[in-house]
Image (cartoon, rainbow, N blue to C red):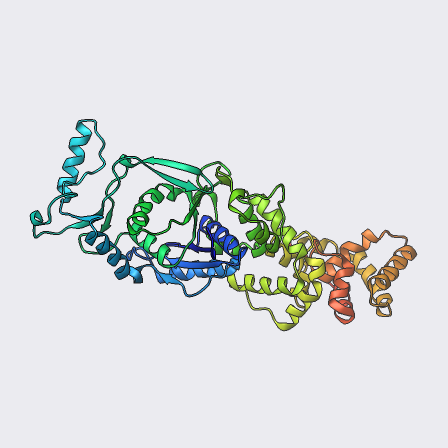
Length: 474
């Protein structure tokens, strides 16, 4: 196929952006963007009872979080109903479709009889070749004339050639009796009118392709390239569902996964480039191709997701990471950070992002920046502020007042103090952590001192040296 690549993502707005849908959107985005093509977004909102503006907003927010930008306006399938019906009427006028006056009762009776005789229950309408002069003045649906002999071959980039016998295809309804177009017609007309060249979607739509091809062929339109991708399964090998935990893209954002890590993981879920596990967006855009998609369902593995996210956090640009961290806090309705706290996080990012797999883990390490004096040490930290430890801090504080405020300077002062006191540095680390962060698990004490600065560090040490642990009654 020559010309510009055009892909589309076409979710139904009946809920949030499911993680399987997010991967479909990502594959379409990677394929188009990696080839200088267009990536379009169409909301398939023809089911008016189940489609909601809130669900559409949730889909757009999920895509925005994942960084999957689309070209042009968001297209509403419902708004194209007149155009979809126009195509059905054209097929009717050309004799490629027909009016079917069969009632629901007649169709049910046909199926019951076929079942009793052990025949196919695929409905064969007696109106297919009826003369228009015999048409009653009654409600009708418009059906396409399906080919009745031979085979239809779906040439699929993932599944290979899939052959379907034409006697297995029914005369699909195009227009309901109230004149409204069905989803199957709408999809084809929209894809054609939008210039979609590649239809990349879940393999649960594979059988639809054969039925949709009837419309393309009847209209004389070029077929798109089909690529039906296997669905995502849970760790137990069953189709991913609510019982496997979080499913919506926004839930993963609220759990604190960075978008770059999520993109990397979703790209790797069912597609591969050699043995590469960790890769950048630039590499994904360069490498992604349809022949790298496997035929088997991929299994969602939270541990792999976390490991990849940790690697992405570690190599992220500090300013970009802070920006995403602030967006994460907003997504979970956390209190807004002051400029001072943001500034502290920015200075600390170099020592926070190592070994943090999610934003909650990163924030836990950043607690020493986010708390205000006087600190309230947690239970473990309190044990490191006993009488002996407070005495050590009291003696160390004046020594640090004149230290050169660099890692080497701070290490030199604390090490010489430890030698003079004939204690190991480890004996001082616990009280220092408790004094500077109010907890026992923190970045290195020297990193905390450098980030907090001389004045705040000395003030916290002074507070801790006078700390009075709570005396429990009993």
